[in-house]
Length: 275
Image 1: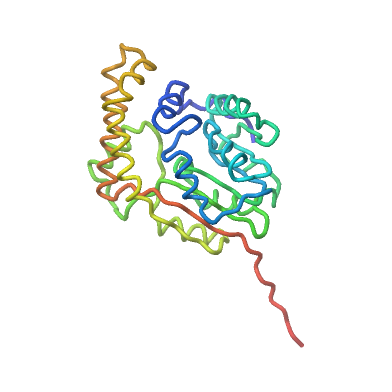
Image 2: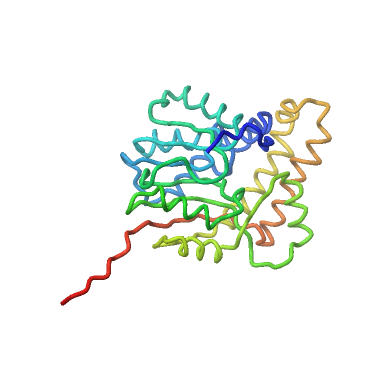
């Protein structure tokens, strides 16, 4: 697996700083430490080896080690600026011995079979189109008895995009590949996972996103415009604020459905012939 230096950067440095202004230092997805606690409810990471897919700027990996007792976390991402920010945060936290950060390219993971006790991801897998291939790789690098623990942005049950959903996707500036909760579950089972459970988080983020929009319109507005440069104040309204407005609408309609995902790798029972 080669480095992805030639890939167009989707999360430039200025965007990362804005995400952190909204969601907290080291976070590029919603909820901060409280949402991590909700995701890891009843999950014990003590002395476990964890792979974090789409580790962002490292805040989650720091929490997994510092607050949840993970033995070692390997955080992977496809964007160099993101990993550089993560490396800075990890060094500041004094956890570089317990957190390894690695730049990868899309495709198979550069890890041996059975390398990790937990494969984790927070709101990053919507960027990966081939979910079946992804889940096969997750299963491969997990130890028997290991667990896949993730949150992701999924979609509601619709065949045709609404005008609001189309506007949301266009304003995002990214290639989002979202599937339904049912499709997500069936693809995990087809890959070989058992004990698959999905928990719909639409109602939680529907309210959270409204609060974030209020911050963008009010307390955070000047701070973010200062980061972008005053000449981009109009662009701020037409991109950041407009995106959040569109997101609130598709959360309200149920077309955007964040979810928590749990699944286990349990060794298949052998068929025994009794004579």
